[in-house]
Image 1: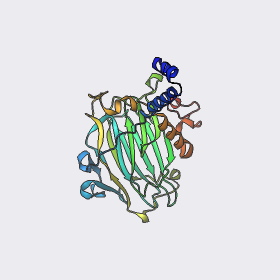
Image 2: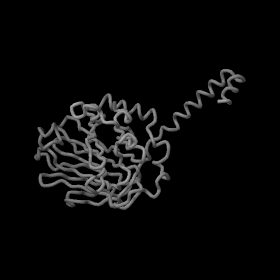
Image 3: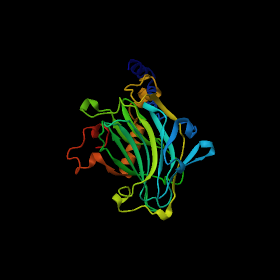
Image 4: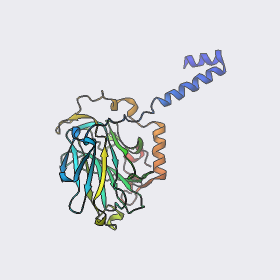
Length: 303
C-alpha cells in the first residue's frame, strides 16, 4: 500500500494504470481449472465387474463400449482406492431413444456408512434431453440430489465429466464447467467425506422403474442393444488401501493447493449460469422435503 501511494503522488495517471493491472493479475491467478486427464488404456486402472461379454474393447483398449440389452447391463470399477484427487471420464451417452436407461459414473467407499459422489445420466425419449443427476453421500446419507439439463447433446460426442475432491470441497464439472459444489462444512455440523477411501465405478443398466419421468416411460427393448462409449481412463488421485483413513501425501498434491480450495469468480459465474438456465431440481430449494434449507446450502451458494 505504501508503494502504491508513493507512485500515485509521483506518477499521477500512471499509478492508476499500475493499480488496475495488479488487480487484474490477482484475479486471473485463481482462474485454474482442474488438470487435463491423460489418455491411457482401460486395463491400466480399471477392470470389468459383471457381464464381461457386454463390454467391448476398441482401439487397443483406449476406448470401451458398455452394452445393455434385455438380459443385462454391465459395469466396471477401478483397481485402486483413493482418498482425494481429480477423477474424470470421457463418455458418449446412449443415442436415440434411451428412456429407462441410466449411465452412472461415481465414487464410493465400501462400508454401510459409506461416502459416495455420483453422476447419473438419465435417458429419455428421442428428441427429449438427457437429465444429469448428481448427489453426495456422507456417512451413508445422501438426499443432496441436483438435476440439470445439459447445454449439448451428450450422445453426439465425447464430453468430460469429472469430480475434484479435496479437504475443502467437492466440485462436479462438465467440460470444466462447475455444476455442483459441496463445501467442507464440518464446522457447522455437516459430515464431509475425508476418511474413507473410495473406488471409482461406472455402469450402464436398466432403471425404467424410476429413471424417466418417475418410471412412466419404460425401456423400449426393440431399440436394444443400448451402447454408452468411454475413453480417458487416467486416474489422478491419492491411492490408498480400502482401510486407509488418511492420504500420506495430504497437502502436497496439486489439488490441495490454494487455487483449488474454492472456486474463483469466473467459475462461480459459470455455476450461476448453470443454476439459472439448466437446473431443474435442487434439494436446497425443495421446501416439501426440507422446510428449512440444509445448513450447507448457503455456503455452497445454492440459496
